[in-house]
Image (cartoon, rainbow, N blue to C red; front, side, top):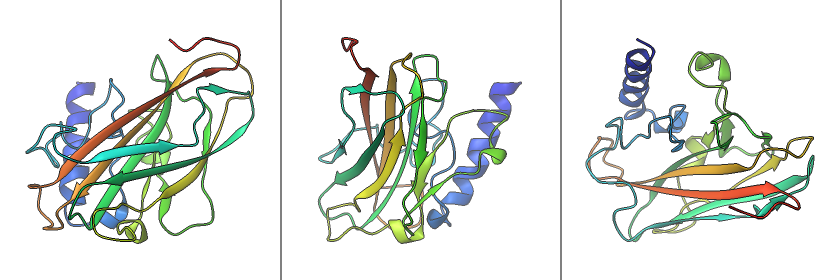
Length: 194
């Protein structure tokens, strides 16, 4: 029953997103293995993830984190001829639990999704674009979505930053978009990456 409720919830959000991309990506579409993506929930599902000539780059996340330290992160993507972009990111440990917290700068191009709207389904934080964060500096280049990640106060779990980017063709339909995924791993300082 929970899986069916989650599916209906995501389909509702994705169907609304087709006409309201400025509202950000729906929650739980960053690529965490226990959750869906817009590609797998059929919001932008006519192509496989990471199919095509585009790429996603994650900058600023070191391989090891110091407890309580704040890291400046930048997410960028490229895909020839694309003008409209969207993204979502979350940080989770191996069990899918939140790891650290996100801090957003005073910017118009990013937002944290309201956890009250999806807390029944996930405890993760999701950062995504706003209407002002849909356009890059030039055709083929996404905005440089810039935010911070504050590591947990105590060393413990390793984590993964999950990022999904929509390189959209701008036709305001479910077809023709390219979805790209990138994952960056981080472990507590002193632990060898796995």
